[in-house]
Length: 261
Image (cartoon, rainbow, N blue to C red):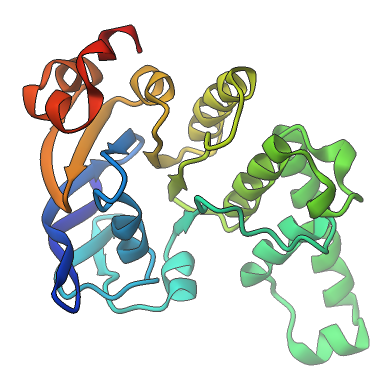
């Protein structure tokens, strides 16, 4: 059963059409890749799905328990509450807050105390905050960041900042997780660890994952299906093996040596 249905999604900026009539579906539990050349429209699609951009036309539906919710036109925080969370190509942490506080902040959308309780530190506030710390530490342990909980985010090595951003997205308790170039800037060892991490969190948190990346070794080895964008249009979709052999994809993006990916 589909968890995300995108139909004829289009986004124009003045006279430039960045995304044109893109349609695709993602099934619950899938790990899907979205690839293409720079400027192909991948991040624009992510921004449309998450409410940063409003589509010029088309629909985005998130399906939960058999009920479809149209997301186009909603604010990013509302879309997050419906179960869609993301990371960013350019890391967007709260750099002057601790690792723990970065994760705790993302969990506050689910707190059960009110403003007065938080001001007066009533028992309901204390109880909920204790739960947030416990859940945050559980996430940080899974992401192997628990020993860095008191460090400022800006002081983490680059690879750990990437993992922290994933932890913060998971803290929002999504059903669909969008990862925008999580391997960007990573060395081969870090990318290998990331591949294992993505597979782990997909299974452990019962997530559906949509992944953008230029690292074909990551995409081809972890994704079950792949969509390919070029000049804002969807030019192919299929399994990694089918995408490797697709002539349009080879010409537009992969090149002839993709078989070694």
